[in-house]
Length: 315
Image (cartoon, rainbow, N blue to C red; front, side, top):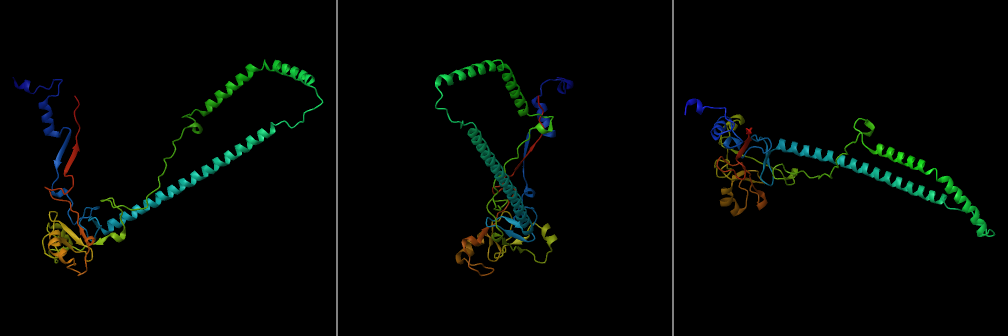
């Protein structure tokens, strides 16, 4: 086969060779890549801002936050709850007014029906001295005359009723070019808001008094904050002086806020259940396991594959 035959692009079929070549050049369909270490949050970074914490606090579930960021989040959530509460109360007020209007209209309709029925009752007493034959004569003639006179008026009455029905139908139909007849969408109903602020990471209720201050022990206390951020090994265990990182399970002691390794907790602290920094008595709830992002090999429950959709050529 000649070179021209190999590079022929006049075919109507999108071949496997062309698809593979396009995939190598620009991507075909969905591509998956493995996230590296740079794409994972460090253990000492805020879960909201993803930056190293200046004044860190930890929740009872072990999620680390910057104090300013989590306070701003709680304030924003409370403002949203207050806004939704005002909208819900306004909706309840409107519904109450509508119910009052409907009850008032129903009461007026009952009164009108009662008055109409009362007006149709005959209150004239019957004449006991009047015979049935004499009473039947005029009534028969009146009935006949009434029937004779009412017979020609039947078509006109039916025509007027049909005309009124068509007019009512025209009034009920919506119109998209007349502003007064344009149909409008009803506002969606507002549900009763929950007045509890939930943690953005765990989804559990979050309160200010549940936040525990965290105090990391620096590897080199003489380093400034800028030089400390640029280093990979920044903090150590407060007891064993082991370097902390995403690959080292850590825990926070609630009384002192010190960060120690879980190995130190299991081998040293749980024997006496005393805080080695402050000397306070510890309970099981005072040992908060710090959540970490993982490494490039272990995700620690985090999805480590990123998906990117690319345009696909249709044949």
